[in-house]
Structure formats: C-alpha cells, structure tokens
Length: 301
Image: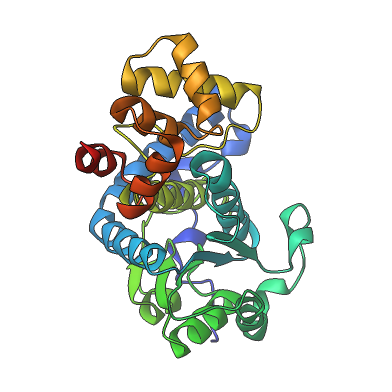
C-alpha cells in the first residue's frame, strides 16, 4: 500500500490561488467561491456510478443489510455526520446507517495521529460492527490511498459485502479495489493539500445523494415530503403537522389529531387520513408494501 503524494491532483498547487496571502478578504473569498463552483460539475460526471451505488444500498436495506461509511479525518467525519442525520430525518434504526472513523469517537473533534495508517484497524472496526455480506460498505478517502480505508474494503470484499469507494483522485488504490468507484475530481485545493475544502464538499454532496436517494427508494419520502421523520422536538412536531397538511389537505386541527392518533408517525397518519383506516390497518398495509404510501393507499382502496 505504498504511495506518494507527488502525483495526486488533490495535493497539487492551484495556480488560481497563487499569492492568496497577499489578497484582500473579498478577493480571497471570490477565489474560494469560484473554485467551489467546480465541485457540482465534478459530481455530475459521476452520477451513473452514484446511481449504481444507490441501487446496491437499496438492495442491502431490503435484504436486512446496512449502509456503513468508513473513513479517516475529514472523510470519516463526513461519513459519521451523514449517518447521524438519518434517524431524525428518516426514522431509520440507529444501526441501519453507520459511520465509522479511524481513531473512534475522539477523532470526531481531535486529530488522532497515525490512525489512518493502519489497514488492520479498518478491518477490526468492521468486525466490531459485525459486518455481513448483506451490507454495503462505502470507503471514503480524498486521496483514495488511505491504508485504514483500504484495509476495511479488503475485509468487506473477503466476506462478500458490496463495496463502494469515494475519492477525489483518478486511478487511486481505492477506486481499483471497490466494485463501484465514485471519483469526483475537483482539482487542486485553494490551500494546497487542504482536502477539507473542495474534496470535502464533493464528498458531502455524494453522501447526501447516497442516503437521500436510497431512503426515497425504500419508501421514506412521499412526493417530496420526509414523511418518516421522527418528531422528537417542537420544531419537528410542527414540521410533521405541515407535512400531513400538505400531503392530505386537512386542516391544522385534523393534522394535529391524526399525528396523535398515529403515535406521532406522519407516514401512518397520512395513510389513515387518505383511507379512513385504523392505526393498526395503516401500519399493516405500510409493512406489506415496503413502506410505500402510494401502494398502501392504492391497495387498501
């Protein structure tokens, strides 16, 4: 797993930001902004591969498997962030989408020197979450050459799990090791080698797509509404009521009533309103039709 930084796009000097330390504040910000505009186009070029990865993740979910992100440093933190947003947004089980970072929880706020250099640690961290062949593992590494991530991918492949690699350099070891390589090449950073910038932004965009599209694929979105959110605070309770109103056209009072009757499950409330069925019937039909509101309403009728 020996590699050097010399030929990595993410490590090259960006001629557009030469002498940036001599620029005014607004000039610095304009340079950063112009470079950030590159990111969405780089991600666009990878959409077909992202779609393939989403299909794998949906397959894992429907067979009882999980989505597992694993990375080091900024890449690891982005994976943990995306995973941690799934339970409140989509009411996923806390173990359905897992984020793992080299060095453990402490590495979320502190740099753990050397944690990314151990391939064995990547393998061990996947063993600790009891990885199975039903799972999809997404290795995240801006360089595409992080030993910790490569060790995790090697182990995932050895037990038959699906593997996806998210990196920002072409022809990296990670892209060659996985079934589905996703490689948004964003070019040199404004501050040379600082991959928390464009590379990090590209990774965040891709991770958003992976989870959001996968959750849509398993019925956790109705129209464009997050009907499976967990209303765990006042703001989310209000959002849940608005979702029910928009989906069904009922009054605010009715939305509040059905949110309560559905045990604060907006998806169930919508099916109850649209079909006139009981809570138990709504739950049964949603379970029968893989959580799809459309199918539950159609088949009940």
